[in-house]
Amino acid sequence: YAENMAQLHGFYMYIFEEDTVVVPKESGWFALHDAKEQKIKFLTELPIYRLDRLGLRQLDKQGKLFFRKLPGQHLKLPNSFLTGELADILK
Image 1: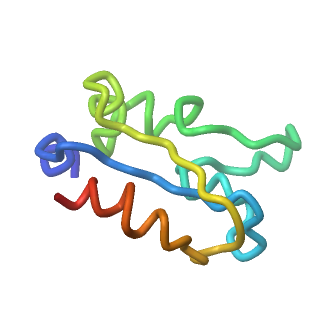
Image 2: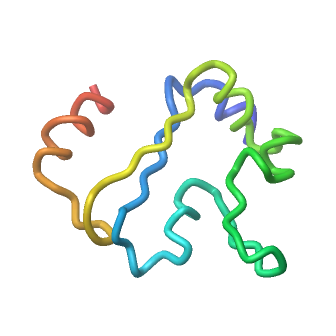
């Protein structure tokens, strides 16, 4: 996986601010809910990042890892996103 990830120009992860489908919504950023500590552990706190098993840490060091938020509910993509940011990423 890490070898394939290294070839990317960017890895974009999106969450929806009012998401009620994905719990916790931050899991769209590879975050996890830690039941023992009752908090969200973000990607950079997890072994999968620290040990760079997927190549995400390397992408992050290269400035190619992007955490983005979109307004609204799960997969309710605003037209402005589709014709703006997403269109730019896919060019």
